[in-house]
Image (cartoon, rainbow, N blue to C red; front, side, top):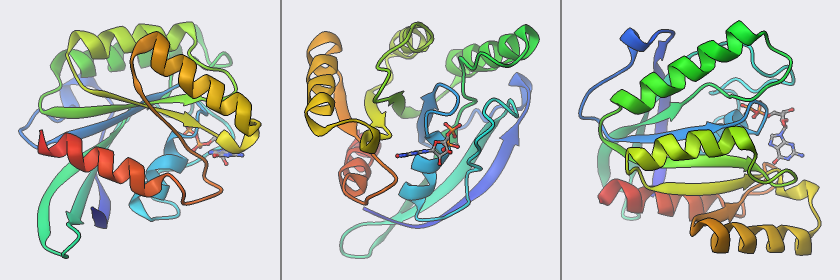
Length: 200
Ligand code: GDP
């Protein structure tokens, strides 16, 4: 699969604003600063589509990107959404803001339709944290397929990374792929897994 176009279609600030339609959705979710915008930009082949930042936890919104793709024979396929959910678990925001993030996330998971895949981003140096498990249970409740991406893999020695991947696979039975913005290595694998999920 090759993404030929990806653009921001809608930003939702409240639960009433969330898109509830039959368009297939691939959801990106993770702690603040985990590298979510960087991953979306890499997959879309765009430098500044999703806003990366070194000051996490800024805006609480759900961003819907319309993705157009072609198959390996360059046949145009249907479009779908990349859904960029607000990052959670950032310690330096107010209790009120962090409650807002939780409210938006639970409203989203309660109401989302046609969610083909949840891409759960985990910082490879930290592994699963309590806040991740809370979200994981909401995703499992909705019976959405999960793909775990271990981000910033360049920051971990190779053997440690391999151990972490194995541990997550055994412990949670999850599909795990490691990722770094520093190379294109896992981009194709991730796009193939996304394509597979879209076909289901
Ligand atoms: P978001 O808050 O989850 O959207 O995270 P961002 O994509 O904005 O990334 C947060 C910070 O981590 C930024 O300073 C990025 O440059 C950095 N970052 C993201 N991915 C990687 C990676 O694979 N390796 C390294 N070394 N830094 C990364």
